[in-house]
Length: 75
Image (cartoon, rainbow, N blue to C red; front, top):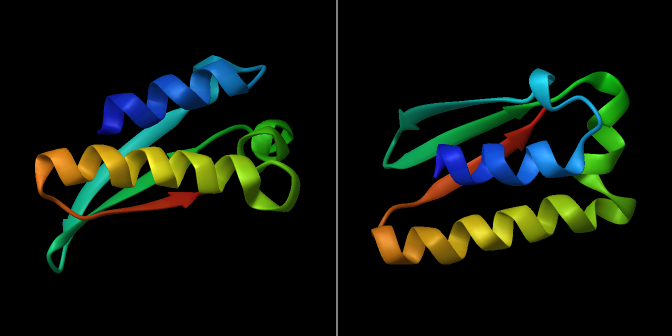
């Protein structure tokens, strides 16, 4: 799942080298943290959070296949 989020984010930003995704298991779910350059933050979040919501939707769809729960934080 980490690779999926990283792949999506790299296509959205102008500085793909600054994209990092960390994965940590907490209390029955997996916490994903997406970090991008500050100037690319708006591109990843989108107007009214639409792009971030779409990324989370893709993660939830893939998580159903894996049978796991994921949470995405963007910073």
